[in-house]
Amino acid sequence: MMRLVFIGVILLLVELYAFQAVKTITRERWILIVYQVVSFFAFVYILYGFSQFDRRVGQNAQSLFTIGLFLLMLVPKLLVAVILLGEDIFRMFATIINYFTQADSISEAIPGRRRFISQVALGIAAIPFASLLYGMTKGKYNYRVISQTLFFPDLPESFDGMTITQISDVHSGSFDNPEKIEYAIDLVNQQKSDLILFTGDIVNTHAVEMHPWINTFRKIETPKFGKYSVLGNHDYGEYVEWPSQAAKDKNFQEIKDLYGQIDFKLLLNENVRIKNGEDEIALIGVENWGVKFKQAGDLNKASFGVKKEDFKILMSHDPSHWNSEVQHHENNYQLTLSGHTHGLQFGVEIPGVLRWSPVQYVYKQWAGLYENMGRYIYVNRGFGFHAYPGRVGIWPEITVIQLKKGERVV
Image 1 (cartoon, rainbow, N blue to C red):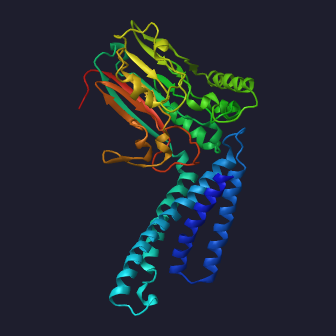
Image 2: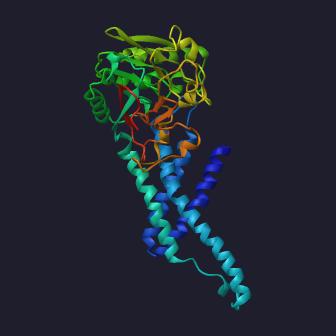
Image 3: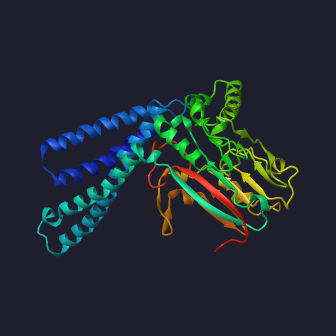
């Protein structure tokens, strides 16, 4: 209840500033009435939606829409409130100066709300409003294929030119458009890679979320070296209240079974050898290991029988694992593939110029390629979406990595 009261107070304060901006630039009564009616019903729905969230169910279509509407209403109006608050601070100091220098009365001393400032505030607010709306309607399915070529001196000769397609963070419980998902699966198949890897989070919480999509994901063609996967933090069912431990354990087993149902070999702290002629590389899969999330991963167990001189590809869902343990590990893990962050589903990316998202203040490796002393991690931006039902600037990703033998090309 206290959370709802807090949300309500924040929305109300922000709304007062936003309405003041609208009222400053127009006196048309019907516009003000429409604005108030729309804001009121959105306000009521948001409070209702949050009040209906059930910890036993977790995220569903209603909670996704509620979060999206909340951000759509809050973020633009919050910008308006910040700008007008800044003007109010200016007006306060101007009032004091005017009163003691030239004004004959308080009313003369207080400068009025400037129409121009309100127009600027609303104009700026229109940018995140349009972006969030686009993200919820189009951006969440705006799939991008991102290609990388990586060079390794110790890559076995017969694997020179090998290609890997990576997907991550499917979050099937959030999907609402079968046609778009079919399109994304077609994109995966069009890459004709030698190996396909899925780095976790097949659902939000419940195994049943994936049931409508099993046949779709089974269309991912099995390539030359197979299809493999690991678990993500959402695959453990940690984020809801279960009626019993037995129910939670049953759901977890069903989630593990899902990977097999879409023809992916799930690696649970284990490794497999991928052979090509006389050469082989080690594919290692750890369970989820995160600094702030479940730590079921056991790198040493997963690497049993793997030698330091072997070429290794490690699948580990959370990139904080690489940052904390993998990049400096004496066993020399040449390439790690992760996901988890989604790039926060919000940010700005201009190739070669700018890459920013608030998530970078939490994760040092949050999207794309990172390197340390010849060891690489690639963080996939995610296939699906979670919480906010959209994407702005950080688009859903299908990664294609080509391995080349040789020194890194600068």
